Image (cartoon, rainbow, N blue to C red; front, side):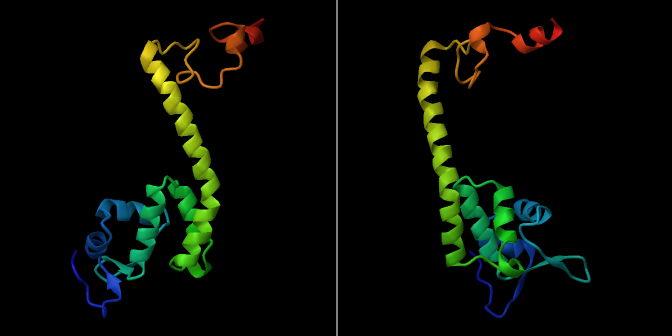
Length: 153
């Protein structure tokens, strides 16, 4: 990992990429989505404040645990003056995200369990497969577009 002098307060996109491990294209994407910001030099080159490294680390950590970028953007926008998240911010936000993650883990567990039975039969039937047709409440009345038929009658 390239070392950058402590005296350097602004990073180029290449330096930010090398230090954060995020691809330049990902950094451009984060910027387009309002997750990070830069200023432009007279030569129209991006310059990022050094603390953007911590913001990128925060974004990537949240993504790794399955938090959508829109949710991350909302969390960052709530920080005073859009400052860089600190340890206390991460603790508070991760606690708030815990319920969402727990629900997602339960849903993935149910999908995994149904996948085992689906692989066993291999039918992928729209009439009975919980993976192809989850939460089907109208299937008990027959197959096909039941609501469309009823509306035309």
